[in-house]
Length: 98
Ligand SMILES: [Zn+2]
Image (cartoon, helix red, strand yellow):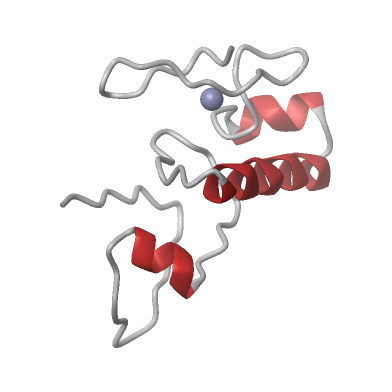
């Protein structure tokens, strides 16, 4: 299992990438890009995101992501109903609380 530990003390349940202690979501860009090409790392991260979303898991704490598919369905799961302006996430640390 991935070595990442969430703030609630539970362990990440994803399989680690070969050559790392972390899964596709939790491996840093720097470490990941030493293991595989950046394009491949982006692909691995996006498919891990898709798997989590499909499983109804919206906890992306600690995840290193180049991009994130923000659909209305996903936003509603995060409790966002309306957006009045642009959302710009750059080197983002997104924290949503109830
Ligand atoms: Zn992980």
